Amino acid sequence: MAVIEVRDLHKRYGDTHAVDGVSFEVREGEVYALLGANGAGKSTTVEILEGHRSATSGEVRVLGADPHEGSRAFRDRIGIVLQSSGVENEFTVREAIELYGGAYRRRRSLDEVIGLVGLEEKVDARIGSLSGGQRRRVDLALGIVGTPELLFLDEPTTGFDPAARRRSWDLVESLGAGGTTVLLTTHYLDEAEHLADRVGVLSRGRLIAEGTPSELINRVSGTIVSFMLPDTVEVSDAATEFAGILGTNLRLAGRLVEATIDRPTHAVHQLTRWALDADVELDSLTVKRASLEDVYLQLAGDDADSDDADASMQVES
Image (tube, rainbow, N blue to C red; front, side, top):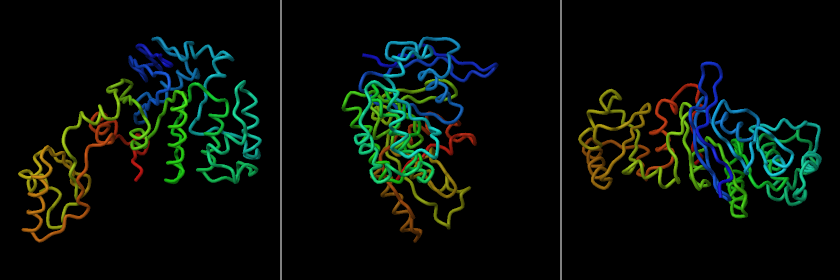
């Protein structure tokens, strides 16, 4: 059963075509990640699904309804975690959750919500006194207090430390396992790879790829080999120096060399033999399988490298 149905969605602002013929579905109980840099159409698409913007043309159904109508029954079935909720700083965490929870017919208890987001020790603290990561947990609490059937998560773990991010991942996974459908936007590509059942990639208003993380990763054949260029080799000479070992399709980022290799054992053997003969160390030598980050960078192209991208897509180590 499709919880979200989008057919040939368009959104124009004057001459700007922010969303250009996007179509996709999100099934019941699925975690679907929508990826894209600033200007890709991601935020506009999500805001239309939430009912905050109207479409220029196309068909959108969310939980069987037109979200732009914004009925009380529709609002009662969804939860939204914005990038910032704007909750009054003088409220305590307890007061904010109880206030927001009062708007829903099927609200979770305060203790359950606090336990899910890990704010037990801050329940009576004023929101203005919280750290950025703690405030983000409050945003998450407000999104789930109504026991939503569909949860929109917009950059949910921004500002979290690694431990808090992993705990939030556990929460999203448990929500999905319990039947909640989740539409996730994130700039942490490892987050999308870990959480999402399926991923959609937006670029310049168009959906350019869709599939499970594994399906998208399989589009990038081979193994990624990377290392820091030795001081004995000029950046301008790197392509020529390593063409016979890594092929001509290597990539440079400063002094970082990266290449996709079909025969990693042979290539690494040749590369380390070159280093031994030259009596140099290959700092940060890494051999890894392709990741969702590699897929995104390959698919999004200039979008991923643009100056106005959201500080570029990120990977949390």
